[in-house]
Length: 176
Image (cartoon, rainbow, N blue to C red):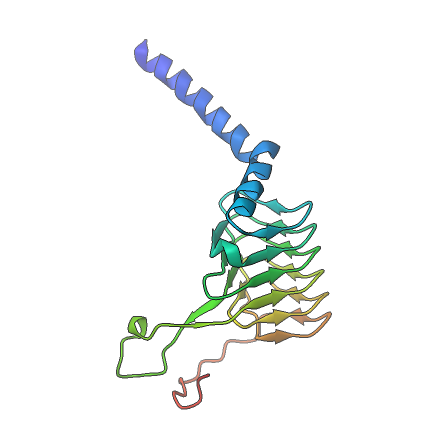
């Protein structure tokens, strides 16, 4: 009898959690919380549950932006500026930090970071699991296809899709 009661209570709690997770109130409270911590967020922005934001004070998001579940925005190494009318699908990774690895005599984790801002202009679509690394500029009207690591500079109205994989040795003399 007691175990059945706990089962009902647990089921009720799951329903409440699901309601809160997807409720409009939680959507607005998440955005208000990010604003309080220093992020600049425009109007009509949707940041889905489980989006991770680091370096909150370096995050700037325009109007009418959607950021899908599981996406990660890392602003620890500089500003992440996202324009208006941008669609960011699920599991997209945007970072302003890259590990340095120029010195072959040091372990990579001891070499620190290279920090550069990221700029994503208006009317851009970052498809599922795409990656935008430090120093990248994506111009307006562009699309980064699913599972693609974006190149440093993407011209206006461009489609970036996965080329065939090329494996080459690391040239330690010419790394920026």
